[in-house]
Image (cartoon, helix red, strand yellow):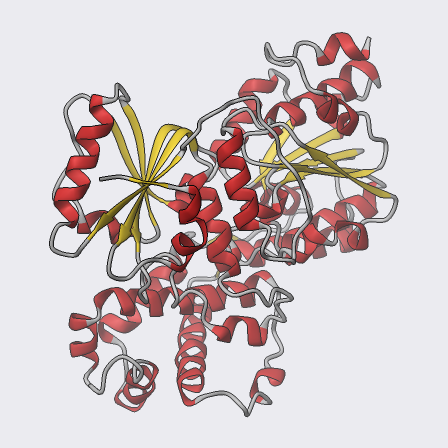
Length: 485
């Protein structure tokens, strides 16, 4: 009976590793590399529970991180199982326990940061803003910095957002330990003063509108379960993209598990943990057994998207960071030279990009995903709407591309500069100092981000590399790449 189910999951036959993970009767983490069929594994687990173990589908809870992922899972399941984002789950729990709050817009923090710098900076705080930029300019005029260092200033704002998100996702309310960090550089002290000032504005905005944000809502849902219990009984909790779990989300899951005596079946890939900026906590994945008793970890080893040659290069690159689970992927696909370098200079960047599109077009490819580290990377190579002949072109940041795939991929702006790839500003030590990041490897988040970019392709990856400022990541892998003329 088991094999009959596994032979046809949405038209596919599951491999040995997927089947072994599915029949686990413990708290389970499935480490699923890029293109290894994690969604099929989740569907297979649910089919096994309902069809073989005869579990009532109302006792199964599925959680993912985006509405798109939730809707896709619902459609492919064909069952009316409770399938929520963490935010929707928290909201349902609060409603069931008659706890009502208005939830602020998800972009309120970003809006608050932008509004602050557009017109609410008090004179006494200007020196702390300009002080942060002393390593790139001697100017103490915020308007000159904003005009002449536009991308650096955007990254500065993003770092503030990242820090505040870390505070919220870790449910931190006591900041006394931060004041004890007297060894900080002047630059970092300037950053903290402005960051806390903006965070105060953000909390005041929430209070004045009588609203809470999503992290607050998740924390309140956990507290509500402890105080009032939970109305629905869930025996099994299935979580997609578990590498993106944060502390407040983990606390919500654990409160449900403790209340219902549930089992967890989590699927994800620590190699693709790229949402540290929004509060994800990789320790919850890497040390899964520490957080869940009676647990076991399974590894999916077959990838159905990438070639073996690409996998070998990507694995060698990503495994240099020791703080992750060791795994090995294999593939039956072959591509002798999947990685191709296109060198450019600042003066010919646009021409090189257009020539590359034409070369890809002449090869017969009609679908291409163009990826950049930052939103504005596409502006360096293209003006206006991204249209070229009858090709299906799409530009995304690497963060936005996660979970997607394309016939071929172009990665832009592989430059050894502050806002290149790796992005050096995103790796600011201030984050590691205060949030006890166990990763000591340089550019750990950026390394995973580059891994995600490389593994979006079903065939080739074209790497646009600054000839005069070659990215450190390219220096590591270029011996495995073909250099285009």
